[in-house]
Length: 416
Image (tube, rainbow, N blue to C red; front, side, top):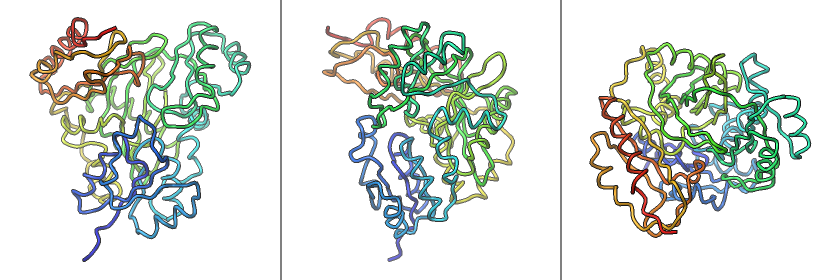
């Protein structure tokens, strides 16, 4: 019996957990490499060991890991989520497979090095500074000469411990809550990055690259409630035929080139300011929270399928790249739920009404009856999201307003 060819996925968690089914649909199997054992709580629910033909736990010896992976003869190595980026770069390079290489790997993970690298390439960047001691951060803020500023871990994910600080006292408190703490990907925050606060509209640009050519799969306009912590409110799929989309894509390509991206998926967060777009940060993997599922519902494809094309069927990738952008066949929005206060969940009475909305596509909840809910202050305390898809954007807008009205009334029944 002939064994199916294998694709190696490093950390198939979060949206990376979507790869195995897509791989099997193409007649391949997935080989999994696990960088953390066990995975931190954020990633544990999405990892399914049975989805993979084999699982290799990385114990710190790169050469030994590469030897074990090579024995399976994978055709490519793909990072599933943020924690897998470094190792995927190393394995693909060692095995002589399509790779972004390791020379610029630090710039694809460390947020300070990322900003420095794009600035060196002449790409607009955000003034940034990283340090392990508060005195250094305080001195940099003084040299910057303006507030507010943003403080966050140098390498994490989501909105983990991201602070918008309007005073020095807030900044010092934020620094001390970040440095030395464990982040959501299971690593210790040895340094803190401080950045100038950029005022504008945030966009998320999802791309796939093949041999240095970049293709935009989907892009989203993000709305945030910005207090001390930024809280995402909703994301709206953008028209790929617009002049604004082209401006953002051109800037994104300059970022990808500066970071040495030649193969694979990248999730790039930008701020569109009065002076034009500027990079917030880039994750060299597919968009998180299983967002590719929503993109596929609206567009008929997602980063997952296009990434596999780039590695397995480059002709399909370049055919899509050569096809002129088309107007959106359907509109899509993700509504991030916002819990107004903490408490034990005694009921979620509106769920049937949510599922009856004209544009309802799916709902994902991280809290259930009996759980202790936290007041939403960031992505980690977001109680879930509702995805809306419809041909008429007015229907989505109406449904969005209904959801927010329910949240203000009795969407969550909470006991103190």
